[in-house]
Image (cartoon, rainbow, N blue to C red; front, side, top):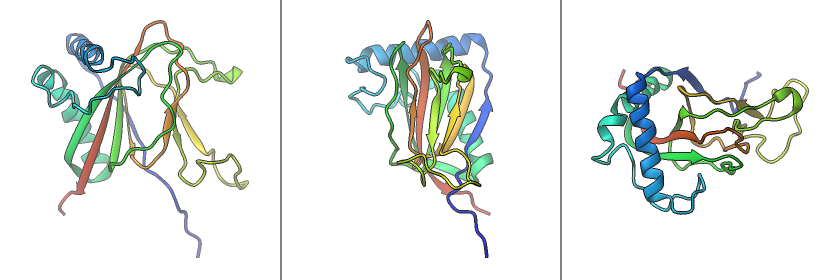
Length: 193
């Protein structure tokens, strides 16, 4: 008997919002970053305060939250029982270090950014990387195995949902304006039926 092990379901979709709502989400994320991230690094926010629960921004982010929750139901046959979200603002030269989350599902939505990668020259500037759990600490692979990591080149409007146990990181960002992202964490339960 042959079984394929360690596959992980990753969901990607383009979400579209009116420019006015997108601008409000951008402003809301930047305001939270200014207020709660004194160090300015994308991974340095000291507060765990969720921007989707805050009275000043919950209405702005509700359409995004609803679409992410709907995508989780569709792609994973689960429903969130707990959620949080935080803004991640990446300035030129910054990156997100390798880490995993202690939840069930994670999602990243890019509101804005303009990274300029050139993969033909091994330049993955601004890329978001998901790491295979069986190969997080090395690059050796058997001839029939795929790459040990999945490189995603983000753009405004992209949503990626993935199991939180997948280690992930980003390459240093080289855009001319900040990359503005919303990072979600979910605990989920299976849908009935």
